[in-house]
Image (cartoon, rainbow, N blue to C red; front, side):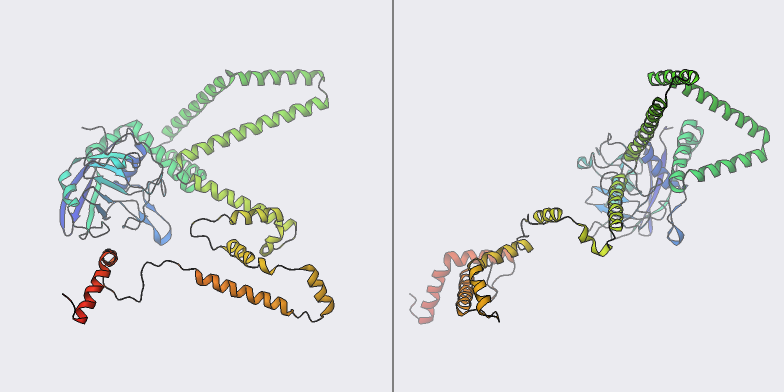
Length: 473
């Protein structure tokens, strides 16, 4: 009997049963991924979602929605059943575990994803070696029975988007009984299962919910078997005492604790003899407070690092948190300066605004007709119409109605005429003339006809003219 957990999937092609496929899950290298697939096969992890939109965490009655070119078959979308959704027993997604196993043969079970650390319930089964998938998808199992069923599913006709034209459904799934009995009898596996289940409940409902469950279990155990409850409580107290004793010994063995003990003894001696001044006490308390703050910050850093390694959405959460903090700071600054939110431009520094405008001027590719480029072109066209301050003052003194002089009108008219002449000289090369008759059936044929016209057009026109005149030899 294999020590790896074994699960099965029963496939149906159209209205006919295709057969059963038994998988062996690699829970030694990828325990979380294997447990996710096993739990979705048995359906023992309940539902996902809220209110009327709940979905059962179970592969039952889900479709195989992709059969890719005799390379793999993909399924497992328990939310939308079309490859656009999915969920895991740990939440929406979970991280990649291990890429040590390769897609080296047919019959390997691997996780489908949309990028790094986006695993959910979707999986695929290889129909041939797929080395281009190594390092991108986690292999966590293999087919040990029913490979002919997988090949039969891989021969189902598909459309242009690799979707099967005949529905392929998982009509039954679960865990093989012998493997399940071994899992139940293995205490280490049971502890891992309990720990995973508790972590999932903590992520969904919080630590208070777990504490309430523990209290309810203790009350039930106390009501049903008081002796066992008393014995278990004594064992828990002894375990706690032993744990505290070990932690105390380890703590005392460090140099940091020795220094802290020495400083504490010195403080007691000084306090007992009244040798410490008020200034020394304040300095000592300030240092002690800084040490405590550093410990708190260190604990937070450790927790953040652990979350970064386990949570697939951590980077997204950090970016969103920074954005919200920035917006909150800007809002407080506007409130302090008594400026409305719709007039936040009043709070912008002129230098900062100019820097932003300079960055916007950097255009590339198709972005050549932006606001700055159009404005620069306008200034270039107006170089011949520069303002003369001397003539402007004379005009203001002599003409109170500010009517432009004939000289200024003539200069403006000549400049517009020159611009129109320059525009006439500009011509953009076009791929083809839309007014010409269509003599082609596709783009390639149009290019070929253009080549024929370039090499033989003059000769063909001469022969045509001779035939029309009747002078052809």
